[in-house]
Image (cartoon, rainbow, N blue to C red; front, side, top):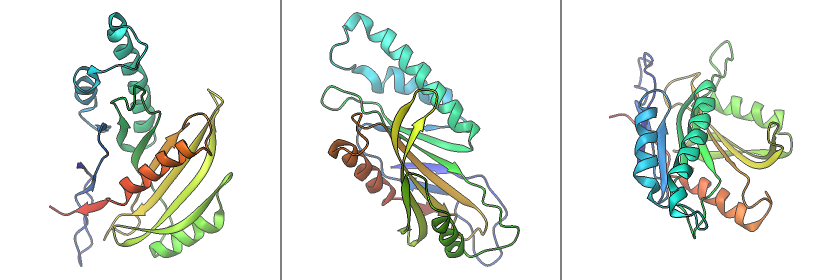
Length: 215
């Protein structure tokens, strides 16, 4: 299980806000904290979890592979932190001799309404706004209404088409605060393939374990 603390804000008088969220991760996936401890987490991943390398890479090139992977992870972590990221999650062990190209980010998401608005109304407005190249639906996360967006997106710098799934979740008992859980994968090169669909289903299963912690 992965846990991560939220920044502390004065809670409403009638009920305390959660201190952190929790997720159950699939085997081989890890959490990289983005606010503090990022360097230490990367060191642990690269020299502990990544004892294996993909098939076809000679043993003599294993260290170079790890260093290249570190640069990629650091790049992802910096970009996620700039966008309000709290944690970066990704698979670090190969499955069937290959590394899955997938990740998701948990981030704070300011939704400034100017005055208190019920979460259901915000979600309805976001659904009405639509999603280019995709769809938005109302779902239930941790016993409360949330938003799920499923769409296709092209990374401009790489011209790589990816499948994206975002969840937008109101922070319990803390009006006006939201977090997002943002998943991205190119799948097997076909964002509509059965393999890509399996990765999306895996992410949805992870989000189904999401819960708030008040300890």
